Structures are given as structure tokens and as C-alpha cells.
Image 1 (cartoon, helix red, strand yellow):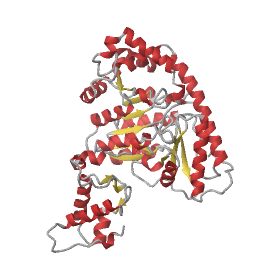
Image 2 (cartoon, helix red, strand yellow):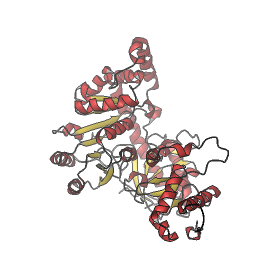
Image 3 (cartoon, helix red, strand yellow):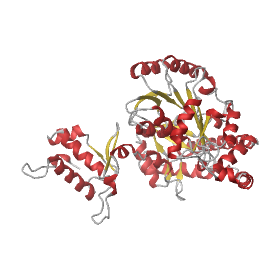
Image 4 (cartoon, one colour):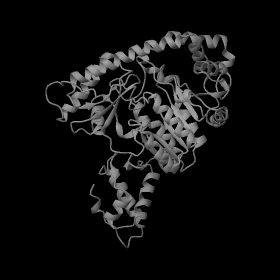
Length: 490
């Protein structure tokens, strides 16, 4: 749309912002401004139309209140929907609070929304090999819970979690049950911690790039996010960020980091802890991938190395059993666990009991460790299949990456003049999904990277998915007609 052609009537009884609003809404309704289009910044449009920035701001706010556009901090304002039909019984879009509208970023939902499509091969959502989940064992344990512990697992339960599961996890990680809080997935833990520790305007240092769910939760709490380059892991840089921004919290995923696969060394972990202790900044350690290594175990967690009582440790069983179980946990100082439990009970009185009981038995019987052994072997096999398929179908230099010794992802730099986001949209239309890299940056940079999860797809789906990716690139004249040669593993 050529915004310079917009004109306004000085003698019009409508305020200037209302005239602009009407013209933009008409353009959205006609499709001239299609869904997904980014509008000019308030300042740029004001200068272009020679009107005040306040006028543009008021028009944009009203569009957002009507649910037609959505603004993202650092990324801009995008068209997200068409106007309500004239005969709509009630305009609910206009009733959503501004606070909710500001923080309803659908990026995380988009990662998992299409996984149930039978025609789609998805490298997007992070999931383990759930086809090797021990279904019969889990069925037996849930039946046992209903038979032997029906009153306990079907009644109101403790907000902090069933004692049997808290005890099983505490024994496994070497802490007290009172320091364990059971969660409905680790995403709930991020939400609880954000609401417990953060006030609007507080600074939070996060990995750069970073897990998108953490970015969303911290933003919803009104935090100011500062990225620390997790790939370089420069501790001098981190100290400088701490001194300049005085953060309320440091968030990091130091083991098979999402999305990069980076594993901080033992030295880096110790130095990180020393810095946090020196400046009295608590650390939230997100550690869902620790058990997904292929060969040797990774270095001890920050929690295990913590001599200062400053680490809140967050984990989940979604990445090693199945996301559908919705069972996560955290461990922290007892005072923190108590505060988080008080917040949890306001939104979710307790986590469902049957799954908690089954998981406690699964952990204590040794079946969980048996499953981990099978899972690591299968994940390593699927990683190799993915690498072989890339080598077979894609040319050298299209994707550059390091091969991580665990985790669920391959983080790639995309070459050949490809725009990762545009490629992801073309691939989705062709029945294959992956995640372009920009959503993993809190500062919303234009990323030339992409993330692929290969672990939950069987070998034949991996091969077919990569073949479809190659076809989408070739259709855009980015590939030669012949098959690819070799992918550099750098």
C-alpha cells in the first residue's frame, strides 16, 4: 500500500486520527493491507503524512483494540485480522484488555499448532521420540494408581505436588522434598517465577538467542530483556551487562541450549555463578535437556555447583517422556518454593494426581533410567539420519551448523540468499515445517538462522521432510537441478 496517497479533509467533523483509522481499516478489509503486513512505524508514518505522531499512535491503538493489528516490542505493528463482519453479534475483539493484547504473542502457539496435521512433516515443535514412549508400562502404572491410591490421586491434592513424587525427584537430584515444586509443565514454572520475582521495568538478562517461551513470559511481566550471547559465552560481556543494567534475574539454559545446542563448560558455569553471587543476582537455570546426551554426561548443573543458594532450577519430563504428560518441576530455596506455591494455587490448585503417582513409580522402579537409555540411542540414530538426509538433498553451504552431542535441535545458519522466514512459509505450504530464527531473539533482530527438531520423526519422515525442503528451495531457484553434494558440519 502506498501510504503517501492517503489524504484528509481539514473541515471534516471527524478527528484526524479517526480519519486515518477509517482509511487503514478499509485497506485491511479490502485486502490492500493483508494479514501479516507490517505497518510503518508511528514516527515514519507521521513524517510521511505530515501529521503528528500522537495522531498515528491513537489510530494504531484503536486498530489494536479492535483486534486488527498487533504490536510487538522491537518488531513493529502487524496486521493480524480482518474487521468483524457487519452482522457479528458482538465485537469481542474490542473487549480484550490492552495488557492482554500487548502480550498475546502467538509465536509459541505457532510452533505446535500444526503438529496434528496428518499431511505435515514438522521439524518445528521440540519433542522427544514419543513413538518409543512405554505406553503399556504407563498404562499399568495409571491403573495401579486408580486401584491402590484412588482416593489420593482423585481428591484435591497438595499445590506443591504429591509427596511421593516430590520425594522421588528429591532423591534423584539430591535435595529435600520441601525444595521441590511440581508443575503442569515447565512453562507454568516460567510464569510463576516471572510473577513472583519481576515488577514492570525490571531488567532480565537472557540467553541470546533464547527459548521463546521465556521471552514471552518475561515480557508479559513487563520486564526489560537484555541478551547475552550464549554462543560466545563471554563472561566479561556478562559482567558489563550486569553493571550497566542491574538485572533482577539472569535466565540461562546452559545444557544443550534451545535453540543453539550450546553446552557451557565447567569453567564457564563456575565463573557465571561467581559473577551472579558477586552482584547478588539470582539465576533461573532452565534445564529440560540434561538427560538427552548421546555419549558422556554434560558438566554438573549450575544448581549442583551452587554454593551461594542463588539458583532456581527448572526442568520438565516433556523432553524425555512426552509433552502431553504436562509434568514439570523446579527446585529452589524453601522460601521461594512456598511463595511460588501460593501463586500457583490461585491459577491451578494442584497438578493432576494420576500422572504424578505413575511418574513417581516410574522413577523409583528404575524404569525411567531404562527408558532414557533407549531414548538416547534413538535420538542419536535420528540425528545421524537427519544429517545424512541433508547431505543427500541439499547443497554445500546452504546450511552451516555445529553438531551438538545431545538435545533435540540443529541450529543452522541459512545461506544461498535465502530468507529463513520466507523459506519457512514456503515450506509450510509444501507440507513441511521448521522454525525461522528471529523469534528466539528478545531484541527482534532479523535472523539468518533456523531451528530444526529431528528427534520426534521416524527415519522415513525425516528423509521425506528434507526432500520437501530441497524442493521448496529449488522452486525458488536457490538450488541447482541436481541433488546436493555435501553439507559442511562446522
